[in-house]
Image (cartoon, rainbow, N blue to C red; front, side, top):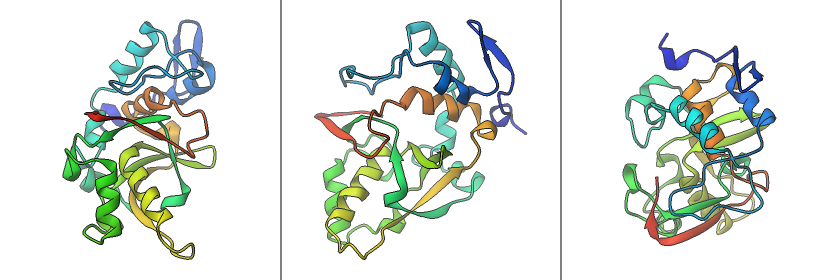
Length: 206
């Protein structure tokens, strides 16, 4: 078992005992990293510089779990098809352009248009990476893909169910610690992940 796969089950940091990294979600409500080029949101969750550095150090290697950045993730983790409507955003705001993977350089709206015109099929979209917590599936890697799929779904008949391939980490306490740290850094939603705002139309973000 790789070090990155080991659950971070016992630690104390600044007087806070962590049974897992995921407990930081409950214990800390002072900084979530915003996306590059996106102004800090108000209100929101913010980690101070030291807390953020702690999580960024732990999140190193997270790209290995994202199929849009590492093909090995497709062979390492099992994929399953999930209804798009059941997925939640971690971000409150996302930039409009993709930086990695098959859609690099494209905008979210371009991918939506490709889906509507059947140039791309939803089941061929690069798998999203999600964490199951508190009864919901939170997308850690693939918030832009999710937004494009959601916008596409709005153009389809209500009876039509849209599915997308996902790598789902079912148990936070046993998920790779880098992925949990990534989740905490990205977790800026203030509407339970039901909506996300697209800004910075001329910028490209990770």
